[in-house]
Every structure is written in structure tokens, then in C-alpha cells.
Image (tube, helix red, strand yellow):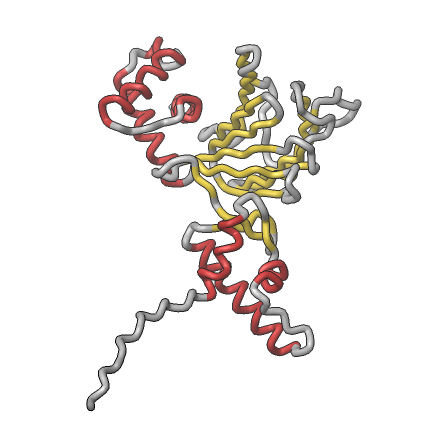
Length: 270
């Protein structure tokens, strides 16, 4: 009697090493990983076989570079990698949290970004003409917005709530609740921004416009400037109404504060 072979269940394709590396970063998106961290998690350590260990390090490093190129992770410091997080489907705004959870460093490139420290939001806008950075501060608890007189250029700056000491040229005092006396160091080097939180209890939140996000916001901001009268271009109410119209009539979602920062950037360029 002939026997009928049972159909075999389809096998699940094994995960590639790149996918295996991405999984732990995706599971803990606020944590930064070294190559050694991943070797341990993936059980690729070979301390008794130096050649095998070297090969594993090279393979993991190579795949991390591929993930960076794909835009899935970012290198927040030399040989320190972290998953990228975005606010919305368009991936216009990238979000990161440092300090308070172990990881205290982040670096990126963006001409417009925001630091959330304590109850304050500090907006950094690079002046397209002068090349320096214009800072505005928003305190939503008291409804107060103000701009810092000082502009920042290339260099390392210490941000904190304590009064400045005589001769501290690169100290920026930002007073507010939940801001430590010495909270973070911000380093500007050309187009690259580096931030180090001093392991503060409440940490530092970073929001930045991605490259595609900047182009998207600029397109909308130019449409606003073209439609608005010169005296109304700086009016926050008119800017807010324009953003609301984009959502209601065109299903385009823009964050009002970032939209205003991009409008200010274009006005500086004129």
C-alpha cells in the first residue's frame, strides 16, 4: 500500500544578523548599546578564541553601520548606537531622551532642534546667514516666551540653573524647575551637535527635525509666508491658524512650535 507523505510545515526563515542586532535596540529605544553589549546579548562572545571574537566584532560592527545607513539607528557617540524614534508617520521629527536612564549622550545634525529641560523648552535655530544659533525659551507653566540675547557659535557650552561664575564665558544659565545646577553640556562643531546630560534625575529630552522633515516644514512655511501679509508673518495666532488649516483641509500634520521655528529661520534668510 502506498503511503502518502505528510505535507511539511513551511519553515520560518532565520533572522539575518542585521535583524537580530536591531531587535534589542528596538526593544529598548532609549538605551545606547556598544558592540560588546550586543555580542553579550546575542551570545557571540568567544573569549577563548581571539580569531572568532575578532570576526564577531567585525560582523556586528558592519551590520550596525548598515542599520545607520538605513536610518533605523544612530551613532550617538563613537561606537555607541541607539534606535531612532519618531513622533509621527511622516518621520519629520526625531525624539531622544538621555540622562536618568543610563544613556547620557546624543549627537545629530539638524539646523532646528529643541531641548526639553525641566519645565522649559529651548528652541535652537541656526541663522542661515550668520551661521550662529538663535535661542528662544518657552515656559508653558507661566505662559512666558523669551529669546536669549546671546547667540551661540562653535564650541562647548555648559547649561545649568546656578548663577554664572566670573570668567565663565561658555556658561548659559537657564533657570526653571527640575533643572540641575549643572545640567548638560552642548557642543557645536559645524553642522554636528553633541549633547551630554550629567545623569540628571529628570534627564533631557531632544526633539529635532530630520532632513526630510525640514524640507517638508520649509515647503509649508514658504506657502504661509507667501500668503501672509508682512505684518502678520510673525503673528503666532496666524501661524497656528495656518497649521490648523493644513490639518483640516489637506490632512497634513505640523507641530505648531516647530513650524514657527522654521518660519523664523526663513525670515532670517531673507
